[in-house]
Image 1 (cartoon, helix red, strand yellow):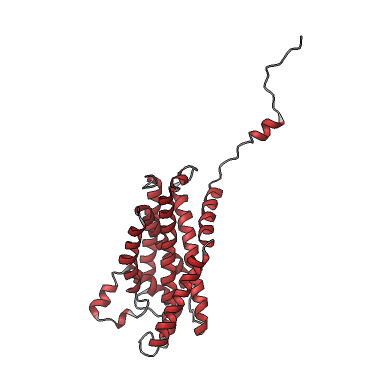
Image 2 (image 1 turned 180 degrees about the vertical axis):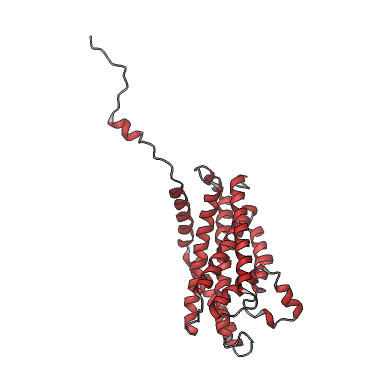
Length: 277
């Protein structure tokens, strides 16, 4: 009689069906989520990149042409030149915020946000991926607006390092705020209200279209309490070497605010704030 062995045997089918598990790599996990977020805004680049660039150019075309000889700015700087860094920074900040906020809110409404809890992401990785992708979009839009302004002449940049520092820190701050608001909001109208009644007024009153030194003393002092003023004014310092306020103080305030906002965003992911309904 033929005897059958009960010993386990490994077959080709077993090896193909049950592959050897791969070790978890935190860096690869972060890059996957980061690339997914970048791809999200790339697929609709007409809306997320081109439209904001055109809007920034329209501001420059209208205000620059109409008020070029009527607005007082820095010595040796025309009003059109003065507008360029303000519009670049405004576009950068608005799109950095919009990217992370809209991505999280859309995922929450569609019910897919809970799936980011399935992989072993840390709160820091989640925050870094959403913030990093939003910074990329903000910088791409800002660079696009800057290049488009070449039609009015090549803008001057006296200190590229100052420009880069304020651009990156400003984008990080706004992307972090976008994460916070995206997790907080449950409906599009909540996010829209925050953008319309908080972000938009602070942006337009930050000195994008004027020097705060041209304001009455009361309003000039009030502008110092607007955090967007420090971002715009410091960014403009990198272009002209002139500013309405001490650039080092502006950089310090901006860096501190960016670190605090990013830390809060990471903490919200750690505790799972509103990740599940």
